Length: 523
Image (cartoon, rainbow, N blue to C red; front, side, top):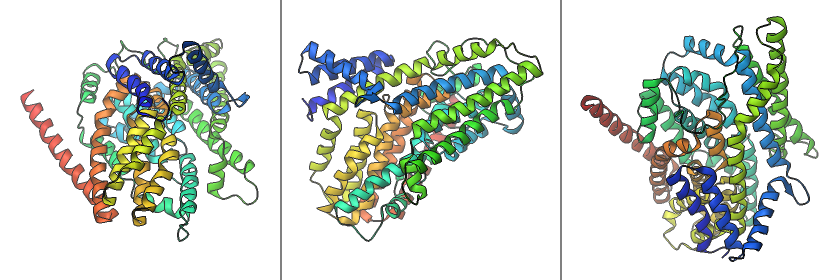
């Protein structure tokens, strides 16, 4: 059953069920059970043992604690507590009131959120959660739906990280590229230089970022996103109150009347600065001899750094809490424990979804779903000019089915190198760039992707609302990107590929605006 077409059943089942039922845990649980049964060839007892091993592996790996996963979960809880205490201190209210005087309209609120997403490029997890904390008070005040905020966060986290050499993603990708170049005896270019040259070739990144800013500026929406935006504008409620919201504090909390903008900004600044400092410290500690910037980011333990940054941010938040309690006497000291309880509770839906997603990703990996999809790409016997677009689509399918872009990088980048080595080495960099772009797109669309889950958490948006509203936008970006890669493969010109996506974006938004105007006149 491993490495065969049957390995596609669990991810397809989970994805189809989650789209139809909108019940994420039920759908992921079904995929997990089917995965275990396939691995055990129908033996229920053996399947239960495989399932237990997958669940145990989330917390314990190779006889030791799986600190990466545990630190990510701990960081989520820390962020929930920080958010609750900031609300109690009046920081969110004060920041929202201040933002209303500076950001004058809905377009400005969305663009500001996108700018925050681009600036915070160190790590996609940190990006998804931190941007939501800063941008949410602004977008809520300007009646921007949480679904739109989640889309903006998701479109400026992984897509920015994948082209940033100074990030956890950049370090990981450059390491794989180095192996590919060494394997095929490419000596006239370094892995770092190859990565830099591939940045303009990553067409999905530029298409997606362009769409975010153009949609925000022109106030054009389509698909189910339009429904969410119109409801938010009409009611002022940025989400569907009848659905489960990841990361949303539902309990009514007392709010200090003396809250300042700094009660929100200082914890976030401390969180960011603490995380960055911890990344640098961790990378330096793990690097022998003279350390370059790439060595630091490549060897750093990002999950540990997130927890350190989260603890620093929490200590600053507690300090601000006691200032409100002791100096202004505007809140009771007992509310500190309430903040901890409510903050942890608010993150439980996101934590459960993440745990289920990690379990199914582990089992899908054991089934060899990624290897099977990779073999299909490797066996394709088509004109070399079509390789970039084929690799883009193949990587997108793999990341969508497996919920991991990094896993797709690890499998498909070496395969792309092998295919190009026996066809046309001139296409090496475009082919590798197409893999990166496709993996990000598939991850962007996948409901079982951890970055998709954390984007909905950061925006405090229902997870499936985020998936279903973002999907049409991502598919449009993907179609434009695929055409761009077809042009690159045929013309061997990155410039022509970029010009192609620019022209297609202009045509698409002219048509959308025309349809929007017709709808307004007839509505």
